Length: 291
Image (cartoon, rainbow, N blue to C red):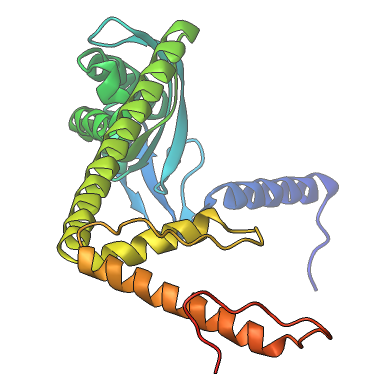
């Protein structure tokens, strides 16, 4: 039979048990899959902890976790003077990640602010060496130069720059008006060039058509008649041009003779259809004898 413990001893056992439980709970750390955990013992780096549960000695060891995922940070808008002395306000964004947790922890105090400050300085230097037209027309090229310069510097911190993008470029109102006028002038120039090319092609086609019509008098006459028909559109009168056709005397005479013969035949048919009036004998036509 166990001897009954006195209250003081029982309290001491309970206190020791609580302290052990607290120490045990504090010694357990969770490391996520996207993190790298560094273990420091009395301020000295002693190893890395794998994803999962890690055990440290409270008060003796310290576990520092670093996120290895890609981070995006906005670069505050800053005023930059281009190579042709134009002031522009540029907004940018940087994407980077930690590739070496030891360097990121040991070589720089605050790598997040450090990489942003470095990107701002490099952006100002690169844009300062570039003309405004190149900055506006080749943003990707300017951003690539900035990324390469920043990458070369922050690699010693265990960082890798994925991308730097120029989000917005703002110009003074006077410069915006100048650029707008330049764009309008370029559009007008393209319009004049296109119109002159169209006029040239049209002139060539007209010259070729005139040559074909000149070599073919019949085609020319058909063209004249078609033009007369277009002019008389919407009216109830039909106009025949009995003028001399261009370039073909024999054709004109034959056309006039044919039209005259048709008129005479129409007159004779009309007279035969009209009934003779009583007591009235039609006068004989000149040149004709009665049988």
